[in-house]
Image 1: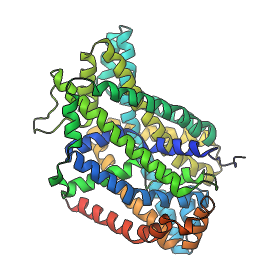
Image 2: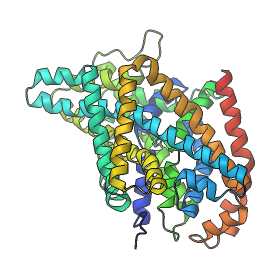
Image 3: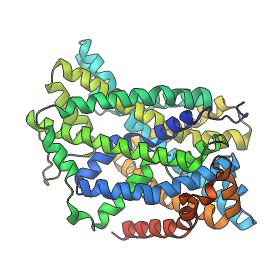
Image 4: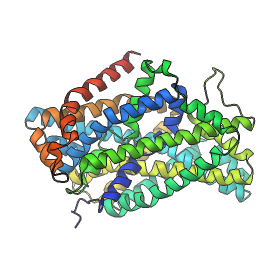
Length: 450
Ligand code: PFF
């Protein structure tokens, strides 16, 4: 029986929801372009090392705290703190997490709104509505406000329905659809002329870049963003997980799914770029780098699809449906952070909490849209490059320095009775206590000084 705060009804439901949170625009868009800019295979290698050696231990800290406390981040960090000082710091850390999750959602929904507009565009083209098609693909404030709002309405509709009937149900529907579309697109792109050149750029490592601090900072930021760490999304999903589930195993599956999808995305986006070159499109910027950022997704790829004729319209439809689905399964996990806090700390009904929070986030998104040049990049950098690793570090500190080791063991034991004798227990406690905070600090210091 689900408790009144909601619960995932199955292990698969949790894995699909947590992977849905992890797999998003960060994987399909961010990872391949980051890899292309930072030494191809060398970046991929560094990313995998960091995902398993730094992000996975931090993910475990969140999942364990969440499942033990069955509470939102603000409350959870107070529950595991033994004295008043650590409780106060826990509370502040929780608020910081909620703030960062909400800010990430406010810029993420703008980008997801662009994806929705580009998803509607092929339909407008098919229907012969050329004026509408032009409006959908030109960057106007009205379009951005409309589609950001629309995307937030979709996100709120899922969250308002609760954990089992909203988050779990929709993750179980959308994630398999995403995987099928993804596989179909990769196969299609890989058989196009020029694709192999893209594969080479992606996979052949330029090891000389491995000691470039920029590569390490980018790979760590990418790993933390991609696993949705630090801001309490995994903590709150962990709090809806049943006691009989094996935490180290489900955490490892989510990390593996997330990094595999990121890796596969490289097999789609970079070959597609080089296919575009065959169609006569420019794929290098004036400074000689491969096109990345919005230009890649909203100019080069749409131009490639347009050049492919009727098939291209279908490919565009599938590609932007894929992006929109990936964005939605991530945005619901971000919205759940402030919503669960509002429900639990202010005795509000889920529906009211969801729509009120959604409206507040829309106001922030609108402010970013109106002051795009000044605010967008700033919010992205402050939240994802600095705040997420810092919060990940604080969560590791809370789990291993503030909380009691025996309680952690007991919590994991409920779904994994022999954990005491496992490799996980031999490594994780001291690793998350000393190595993770130190390594995250080093990388953060590096990025602040560079
Ligand atoms: N993991 C998502 C992605 O890769 O796009 C982004 C994300 C989701 C970041 C949830 C933070 C978060 F709380």
